[in-house]
Length: 206
Image (cartoon, rainbow, N blue to C red):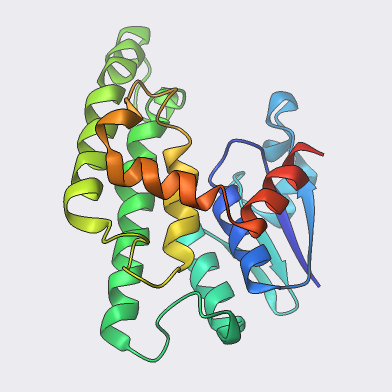
């Protein structure tokens, strides 16, 4: 039985959706960011990075969303959540997820995690002011060049879709108008029709 540590509104949603889509046996445990539980001694023993998601498996602990998504896809190949029989296509999937992790998520984090990069309040304000521009530019690139449609990789649903959907949920708060991104908007709507997504959203609210 897998155990996923998550916090609502975070990128942990992507791995949670992937687990549900895969039909994997899992339990979830909420990490309370409001009380700084992610930096508690108990949680740091599980994930020394003090972040979510964390996935506890029978072989050890995994962190970092792209790694967890690849693990889920490879562990439940019957769910067909990645092109596992095509090294190049699997590489493309990894490239997309890596872009979300290394660039899009980092852009978003400048809104409330400015202390990771600076110490002055004026710097924090500058970072926040840039969010609509940097997030907007990232999603214009995704809209134009990366989202093949109807799913990220084309006709086949993959773990990329869970990850893209998760970050798309941040756009309203980041000052990016979803109406300017018709393919991304349609993708979000299609995701919200999937039973696994509906199941996971309900589980995270419970």
